Length: 342
Image (cartoon, rainbow, N blue to C red):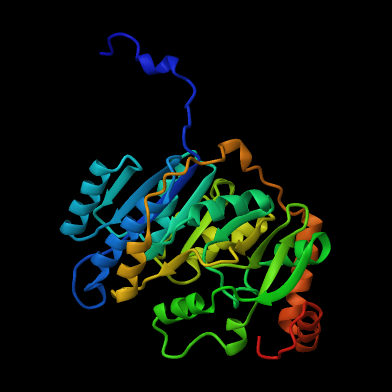
């Protein structure tokens, strides 16, 4: 029998004091083979993150059936840091996307950063992402790691906006060494980058804001508008990390909603992979605890998606470039690149 009235019934509105949520799914089942150094990598990820975020940030860690020592570490960090306000423990590995969806759906922040557990965050990464989200209200997804090759996937809105509403232009890569480091971290037998990719990337401008960003971006770490999750698919993911599952739940909703997919011009994060290297500790030593008060609020991040007509035009342009080599070369030349290798 219920006695009395629940006092929370009078508190109808939820007061949101934060505006940026970071979600980290982690899966480290043991410490052998592929996962031998993964725990140390994860610790570097958390340490770099806690040093570089502002006070209006909150962090969710989703434990996808990790080893007991990893679980203990997560609980310890939860107790120590007010920034880590949510921890979920699953006795089964439900996969990256389901961990993200479960974490995002129950939170209210307008900005959601999703990140793998092997990402190292550099100083000022968060300010760069938030400033770019304001400078490009058409953007729905921003990556802090520019990639010259990310010019062809899920960027139809970029083509329309850059060619008809603002400007597209090839410019020198600001930090080619960081791009090499990212390529090395993937562990591929052969580099994905050609020399031209280390020299130039395609830059998209917003002339009204005097701002620029790199065309395209990855999703091993990315900041998204929460609308991408709210209005995207409500289905669960039945595949863990392969088979285009990230495309279905992140990339396609972002594009279909009319948002740009861009990256910062400078490099603000590193992909560490599953092994420790000396440079990681060197980079950690350079970090200082973020003391700057955030300059933004939830109301600053208003979205201006591309119109349906613009999306259609962008789709046509993207298809023509992908299917016709002659058109592709003419477009590249028009944008300031004289190379057939891009």
